[in-house]
Image (tube, rainbow, N blue to C red; front, top):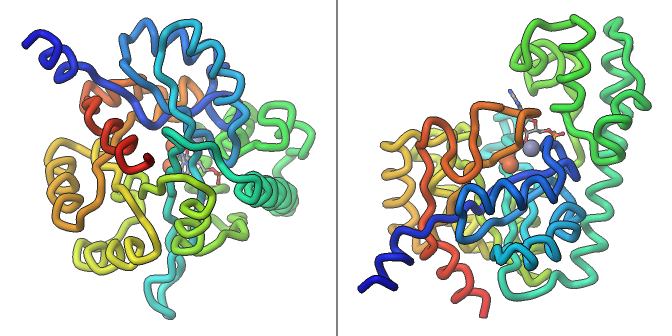
Length: 296
Ligand code: AMP
Ligand code: ZN
Ligand code: FE
Ligand code: FE
């Protein structure tokens, strides 16, 4: 029984970021941390890029760590014509297949859209009297800079007193200087992911901000488009919510997944790799086995 006891206690993390997007650790530092933490497997899921994963892969192999290729994409959901759009993050995993060339090309377009959003956001902030330049932003996040990089600059220059405030006053959806990115619909992103050889999963569903009845109606729509999984365990999901999403995944025949959404000290520094916030995350190895079985 010792082998099965080992695999039952083995835990993994399927959601993490490096400094190739808005995390603070280099790929090498993240692999070293994952190894020290004793993770049985890790997925790097940077926003819009595989660059961190590509650097990490040989390092993970050398360290004997099972590294899964992943990515986190933004998408737009229109619940009804009157409501303002919601944003759904879609994680896409490639546990046993490589992404197609078409998928890589589509990602390149996403990165172009991100850069043009960043240019517009700099202009919108300047119009509000904020002294900020694209060069400053890209010095931190290169061409893949995200709003957390903007938030850090606003904080350091004293425009806000904390990170959350930067989103409330300047960067978030309700701020006057908010700039929306051109995003595909959630169904389109799910279809592209499947065509690209990946396994799409809805990330941190609580953050979409839907009422339960609406969520219950929308997820089958996504499944119709090819959705495979639902992120059940996440640092933003307290235990009761994790149980709720685990049951919902079962009911809708979606594979459960989970991860901490670790970014290092740049975003939500209270989140730890593997264990989330105050140990509220523990993802069993069987979740990855489920993805692998699907991907074969
Ligand atoms: P971007 O992909 O550049 O639009 O930036 C989105 C990222 O900003 C998310 O993945 C979060 O890490 C972070 N973020 C978004 N909204 C907030 C918020 N209200 N407070 C803190 N971080 C946020
Ligand atoms: Zn992020
Ligand atoms: Fe996310
Ligand atoms: Fe994330």
